[in-house]
Amino acid sequence: MGDVTLFEPAGDSPLAEKKQASRYQSHSLAECITHLSTPKGKKPVLKTMVTTACEKNCFYCPFRAGRGKTRRLTFKPDELARLFDEMQRAKLVDGIFLSSGIINSGVTTQDKIIDTIEIIRKKYHYSGYIHLKIMPGAEVDQLYRAMQLADRISINLEGPTPERLTALAPKKNLYSDLLNRLEWAGRLRSEAHQKLASVVTQFVVGAVGDTDLELLSLTEKLHHQMGLARAYYSAFSPVTQTPFENLNPTAPLREFRLYQSSFLLRDYEWEVEDLPFESSGNLRTDVDPKRAWADLNLRESPIDIMLADRSQLLRLPGIGPLGADTILKARRSTQLRDLGQLRRLGIRTPEQLAPYVLLNGQRPAQQLPLF
Image 1 (cartoon, rainbow, N blue to C red):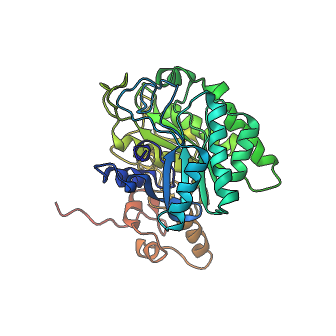
Image 2 (image 1 turned 90 degrees about the vertical axis):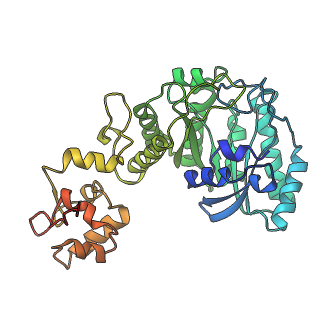
Image 3 (image 1 turned 135 degrees about the vertical axis):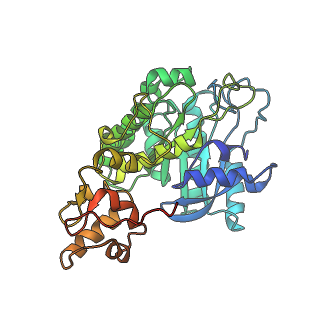
């Protein structure tokens, strides 16, 4: 079941997961173990499925119904729990990401996922990291129980609009199968008197004409209205023996720009209207979105480092939340006059700020290129 590591990111560094998975050229135990950055630190995590059989026919998926090349394997809950316990005791893993194909409805499959984790938690007394996939159509009680047992749950939307999802997965409904589960999860977390799992989602990028504007608009809504912890963006890659096998793959750089933009929305006080979309509804891939915005807005109207508020500082390339807070603190006792002072404050590449800022009321000196 190691192929699951290629298609479903689970940690806080999804691009690194893809690089790690690509190292394995033959099936081995190592394929199923991924070193993830998790809310509990970096850990070796078992990534696997209850079953690789599936009744859904998602056009992009290697586990889709009817794909002859997929080897169908199924674990019983107690069997999978025992295998995980043996691996955990052998110190091969310290965490599990559990997904599944869907057989006999999402409700039945969700029960098997929950049963497996209840055995791991109760019988084997495991208290470490658990990330669970929520099946389309899962019931609210199942969702609540999964959130009690896990540290993180995934409710994967795949497409940003009903039309895009239908083109990707014709047997799934964006609202009745998926979005309302995210709404339930947000409500359960807000009303809970105990700690519940954080919630993430995933999109398949580029297979059916979806735009960055569509993807990031929904991402922003999920962060603000449903408490989403993060969104994953999985650049489409064609799989043989699927209806999409002859489509072109999505450039990995597009996926990277989506991640950069989603962090601006979540952590940098940006709104989707601030992002520099092109007329196609997509972002430029040749430059990061913050730099693209600064080129459009700050070259003629630079920001004075000594006068800018936190949200303005967060607009500058090379300055993140920690850097902004450090500058604000330093300004109380120091007049910031040159780029060297910013470097000493921990701004690693202050030179990239030069076209966009004023220091001591003037544009800082820039070193001219040698060629």
